[in-house]
Length: 270
Ligand code: KIV
Ligand code: NA
Image (cartoon, rainbow, N blue to C red; front, top):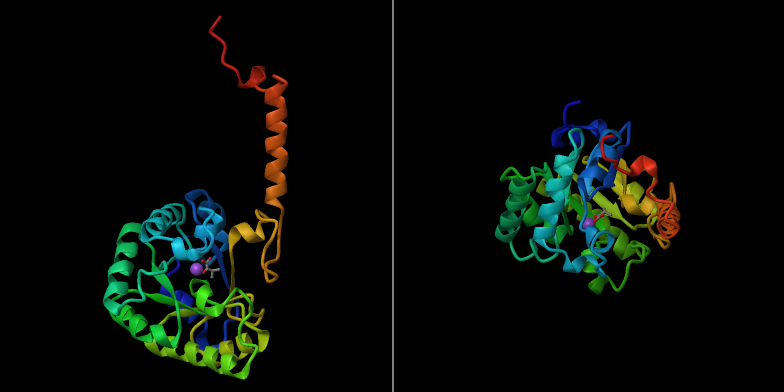
């Protein structure tokens, strides 16, 4: 299987309609990437790794070094999906030049195909600067977690007319600036639907609508690694319970000296 490309992803929305929705999950490690790769179109090395991998309180503390290390691991572990790496808070908002320096470092050190950044109209100039210089950009609008302090929390967006209009104009602005796709997070369904219908680039939803051109979730959330997940997450499994169970078994066998057995023990040649 050859690796998908950014133009192929963008072209999945030919005639303003995506016949087969795009499948995207986050991935943070090489092994995770190996397991997800053939089932996905896109792997996102999300800055959600701040909470998921590092136990940080939000994505605001995530660094470029972290994104580069995990981005490189995910590229090494995959050969089919388009790998997109999040630009961390503080690494791109200052100016288009700053964004170019960060994005080019991410692309050179990881081998990823594209970067993602949060923001609509306010980031349009930056998106255009990057895409004109050979860096494919995925935009992220609606609930943008790096702006949690300004938004006042992680609640769904677009419940008011003004907010609705703002999200649609953000989508149009990032498309006009050259973004190849856009993630819309945590919005009421009518906005997700009208955004999807208004744009020619794929709209990938998270906490949005089944009518988007694709879906993304945080992989640890959907696998059930956490007790508490946002309402838009469907838990397809309960890995946390499974891990706890296995670790309990191991611990009690060690304490009972029933692990290791003969099978796991070396003996001298007789
Ligand atoms: O960081 C992340 O995981 C994301 C997705 C949830 C879209 O940005
Ligand atoms: Na993110």
